[in-house]
Length: 449
Image 1: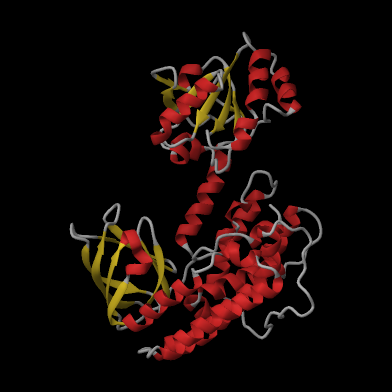
Image 2 (image 1 turned 90 degrees about the vertical axis):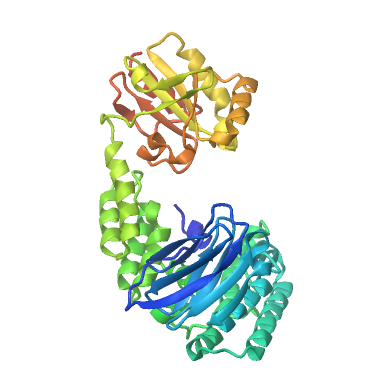
């Protein structure tokens, strides 16, 4: 879990609580897939069920003045909510960003956000950060100039928004300056690229531990997280990095920022680290977000539940040859499980090695089982590939891909994953060696099959 990974993490929302304000949101959104929309914010989520014609009207209790997210199943857009908001919105989900219109109190601010989003989205991050230094700076200046012109001609109705947005425009520019070196390396496939001495320096006067700006600006959140990871000083292993990160989290004043960094670091609670229990306890004690605590606890409990010689989570899945196969039906034999998918390149790369291992242990007291986490709708694609590749062993299709109980029971987030279970249904190794790893042969030979 290297430091550079954190530089590319998707920024997610964390938690915040203040006095609540009751606001009104109404309107009509047509052509949604599931007939619902959601409003999400800091420790806040409200699902709104649409009427048959797409209309809706809801009174919502919000915790703070700031930026929330309006989501359909296919689209999302930042939305500004504050006390006294009485907002009506109209949109077609098929052309969401182009069609959205606002009326009512705070409509001016949200129309501005929608227009600003359209300016920003005219170039993707990949296209922007692939540009060479001079082209990049010119493009960033062009974006800022366009947004500033929009700001200057907008007659805002909320003084707080107007004041905060000045800083927010600056945060967008500063974010691009701060991200460019790392992202140019990534998107332009360069190694060791460094900006020139003439490249603008990050404004060190910006306070990146400020709750008010955090609640108002997505760009601020991204700046704060990246600067946090850049400022971590450590020498040594990944665990040394995690320890340094925990110490850094404790020093942060903003609970929002603490939550956000912990959310981005949730899989530090990992059995690969001997002190995963301490990491779990540290993260748990430094967040006040209940959902985040539940996620951390779920990961931790999965680790505890899947320790060696504990009873394995169960499965009962569709067999590619017909019928169903359960783990219970395989009792009396060791079971080596390959969790894979047809779209997973590294999974398919293991196929030749798996076939060799299956052949080597044919007739022994072991059963080889492959569980695909392909979506049920891709059943035929899965079945065809099993036939085309002439895959051996027992080929099963999980009932709900990564949300299947067996998969969740082992906390599997990445594939391929290999698991070894003993004849009594107990776990021998919940993260067993791959077929291509000679350690697997050593492990199987030690079992005296």
